[in-house]
Length: 152
Image (cartoon, one colour):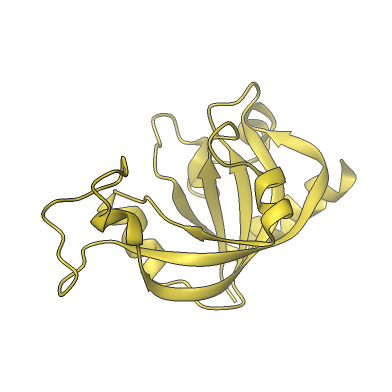
């Protein structure tokens, strides 16, 4: 099982939305490196839900990968902000994964606290200028995160 950190702006799609829906397609990824990370995901992988562009930004919950290798439907929708006119149904460029809500954490673990606790090589989100919406999390780092998150 692998661990991930996946970012979303809470006013666009937040942990409460995922809880209400139960599962969601994690679509709209338009960065090749993030897409490639998503392509390595497997059902059963766990992902920390990170609220970005929030005050404060940070980890708020946990999700489980339940579907992978899915074609992102937004790339073909001309009314979507994620429409990609160069992508064709016979050769799609963009994938998505299906994620399932697992739980909220007792309290948000803010980016400031993450920067105090982790080095950039341990947790990519603490590196200045990192904008990727999907990042791998090493198991040892995931274990430490879970300990911090459970302490609330």
